[in-house]
Length: 241
Image (cartoon, rainbow, N blue to C red; front, top):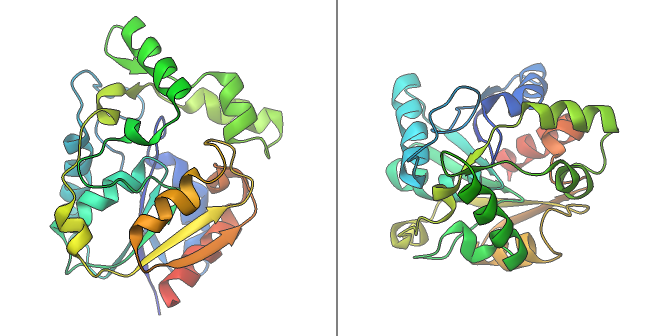
């Protein structure tokens, strides 16, 4: 059976980040969609972008492509986005998949779930920018996000990242509707993910999902680049859970 995946990217990324995974899914007979969130990607207008704008990007995409029976995937920051998107389409989404992704509690923002040193750095970088954005420093990207990639690959991908609108990390989300939904959920945990301290993604945030299927795989936070074939297999397996 062919499955339809809607793949939501994380901070600094855009829809292009899923290209390799989409190719792997297609080779196995499945379709993948990767919308770019508002304020993300090259040449985007970032000033004033809110979390709601990011969610609305995906909602608009659903309407544009008339998507149904979807496996909705969120990577990293994208987890907070799919929490709100599923509230709009509970009858069109048959499973949520969180790939080392944020799972916010009701009335939380992303920064409520980050270590204080990250928050201080990101706010400092945003304050120094002209449009309240910040870009992940190379050293953190290389050592903590994609440490399992050859340096040339890590450098090439980092060069494609875009500044992140900082406001999206500050917006509090009302999630009472999300937590009342019975949509099946999967959490994919990457064993060598160093982007956040051990335990932050799993079990701290994953446990908020209540009943969910847990899948594990090797790799860093950026397995969509470094282990795209294995990740595609995990996504397909999640659809069969």
